[in-house]
Length: 251
Image 1 (cartoon, rainbow, N blue to C red):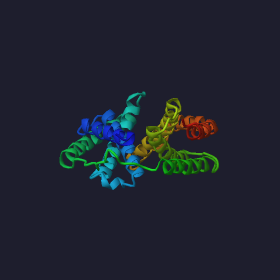
Image 2 (image 1 turned 90 degrees about the vertical axis):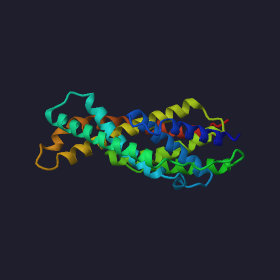
Image 3 (image 1 turned 45 degrees about the horizontal axis):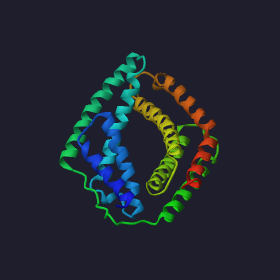
Image 4 (image 1 turned 180 degrees about the horizontal axis):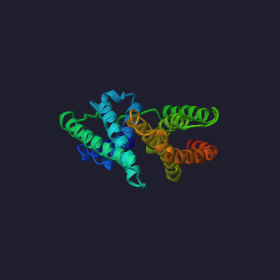
């Protein structure tokens, strides 16, 4: 069987096994699975919309995941009364969204396109696509100073696109797994910076009317986010070198 088709089928089975689960781990795993499935379909020129209810599910899971990430971060720190109040709000919001996810999964089961065992793709086209994505990513990284999370978020989007295409290549060509793992670590770092942005935006919105100054409440989170941004900025050139090596050193 075509290795890419085999991988696709394994992702579909993995999704089915946790389809109705709503804990933070399963919601994360379902979103990651869909992120991996969509690029594989794109390699066969199949649009994500061909996964019936898939884009709607991904959007709903994202809402729940954002709330769960915030809750997890706040549960690990010493809390002021204001943060405790916001945490209570998040837990109520999480329960409500979990109910929506369960209802959605019971009512709208995802239907995935069938890839034929002998389905084939143009490997060179995928390599070319990865190269173009890498050039776009490098241009984004070199576009100027990285002053805040908005700049990082733009890099994160381009990095994710590139990484998932490279992952497709790893199913059909020999790519160093250690380098793939290094790429994941960079993506995790970018994701953590984004998680702080989601948390701070949530706090600002919650305290926007007749509440204590949100900026004072989130100061500790801004400092940690700034530390992470500086750390990534210092490693940008190493990240670029890694991404280039992943494409150059294929077996």
